[in-house]
Structure formats: C-alpha cells, structure tokens
Image (cartoon, rainbow, N blue to C red; front, side, top):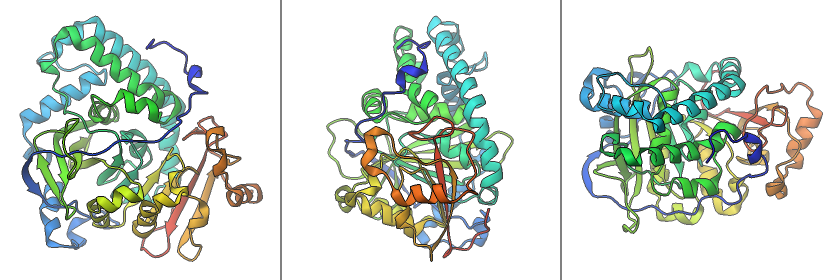
Length: 423
C-alpha cells in the first residue's frame, strides 16, 4: 500500500460483510478467576463480588504497577512503542532497528496520520466526552464493546476512565509481538502489514471488515491493540493469552490458537496497562468470539462472563446493524439487561428496543438514513425523533459509517433501573 494514498479513495469502499470466523483451543497453563465488577464509584472495596471465584481477579486488578514483572513490562512496552512508530530508548534491544528505512517510513506514516486524526477527530471526541459523558467518566465502570474488532482507540477516547475494557470480535487474537526475533529482512513487510491494517480506521473511524479478515488473518489483533494502547499514552505492564472455560472463568494459556486447532473454549488476551500519570493499572480483555445466537448457544460461557460485570457501560459503533436481526437477539438482550448505560450510533440496535419506562434517551448529531449498503435498516421512528426534536445537539466530528462531519449520530441511553448520576 502507498502510505501517501489519499483517504478519499476509500470513501466508496464500505464493508460488505461482517465476520465469518471461528474460535479454536489452546493448551491450559493455569486458572484465573472471572473478571471483577466495580461499583459506580469504581471502589472495589465497597462493591461486593458476585461470587467467590471473582476474588482472585479482583486482587489482580488491584495490583500496583510495581508488582508486575519489570523486565517483561519493559519488553512489551518497547515492542508497543516500536510498532506504534515511537522511538524506544537507546538501551533497548530494538533501538538499532530504528535506524532502518522500514521503521523510518513506518514511523513517519503513523506520526502524520495520527496527528491528522487527533486534530480532526480524537481531540473533538475527548472534548465532547468531557462535556456529555462527564458523570459516566467520573466512575471506573467496565466498558463493554461487542463487535469491536481491535478498536480500543474509540472506546478509550469516549470512556478514558474504564476499569476494564471488554472487547469482542471474530478477528483472531494472534501472538504477543516479539520483535527481537524478527529478521531485519522481514521487518519492512511486517510494518507495512500493520500500516495496511490501520489505514481504514485512521481515515474512516472504523475497520473495514473484509479487509480485517485478510489483514489480521495471520497476525491477529495484538499489534493493533499495542499501537492504540501506546498512542493513547499507556504503558503495557503485562499481556497473557487466555480463554474462557465453561463456567465463564479465565484460563491463562501458553499461546494463541493456531489454524486447524479444535474449537473448545473461547480464546482471548488480557493486557494490563497503566495510563500516563496514574498509579492504578487497568485491564483490556479481547475475546475472539462469534456473537450470533447459534454460536452463543454453543459458547454460553461468554454470556456468563459478561453477566459477572457490575453495571457495565456498553459502546457500539459500526456494528453492521447485526442486532436488527433476530439471529443476534441473544447479545442484544444481554446488553439491554446488563448495561447501566449505552452509547451507540444507529448501527447498534433500533431505538424501538429501548423501553421508555426503563431507559432515558438522549440524541446527538444528525440522522437521515444508513449508507446504501444498509439501506434496508432505515429507522422511520429514529428519523422522526431527529426531525421533531430541535434540541438535539450537533456533533463536530464524524463517527461510524456516516463518518463525514454533520452526517453522524450518537444515542446515549441511561438505565432507570440501575443507580447512577445523570450526565
């Protein structure tokens, strides 16, 4: 790919299909208890765990940065910086690779693309979040982001205070980057593949699904997660391959599943990270899982895992309108039952599923109709709301499939059944 190619070439190239992949099995190394919940104030001490099996994970989430393996943390952070196009210290084993033309081109491309993205979009999202999601971001609630792929970037931009980020997509996990083992002759190819995988989201605000199936088939989501974590000023403390067992508990495993391995448990990765200027580590979970009804009936452990979260905030973006369909009612109902609040564009779920006796709704931006690919998913009810409510605030940034400024929409839903302060 030509890194200087104009973004406008992608305007007509919107994704045509969503995720068709399966999960495979790993070799178990050890067991970790399920992810903890946090109270609306983020105080684990004041929030009783739902069962005893959560205690181990609660203790893990309260580890200080100094309790992590310093050598491993330094290696992971250096790897993340390197693939994010940020210079590592001269003492790093990767320092010499920064003198290559491959890394120089990669760093230049990312620095330029990231600068434009931050100026035109991310900085505006952060400002909007500070104003419209202020009370939500005063807590450290878990952030649940189904249909996410490796898009940690936008979840973190809207919700920078989450105690955990639980992401799910069909893209494979992949290996934890170990750049010291990559021959210099292969470096250019590896870095260009990362640039290619990142291109759409840096220009359009979302990953193009068909491209992801090709771009991430070999390397998985790990390099992309590392780039986003580092570019949002986070230090990586640890990364572990995991899977969910039949009880929804986390099993630590030795490696990501390989093609052809028998499918038994849901594979994933757990990344512990530390935001700049903070002392309390956070956790990112990514699971490679099919969220259709048929698949979730075969892997009920994912629902079990999500139900152990306490008052999660759900985020949905560029979700391909899957939850408009009956065969995605399971994940749709799970979100509506578990979430304390939800932020979505119109590709998430129809407004008709939000019972006015249970939810307060607030709308932003502009809704006219979906892009042509999803034209059958138009919502007359939502269009009527936007046409009749003159108090709806505009958005000064683009988001989702309608990524042009002035064409995007967001809906914030706040549950009336779960205690929380209103924005």
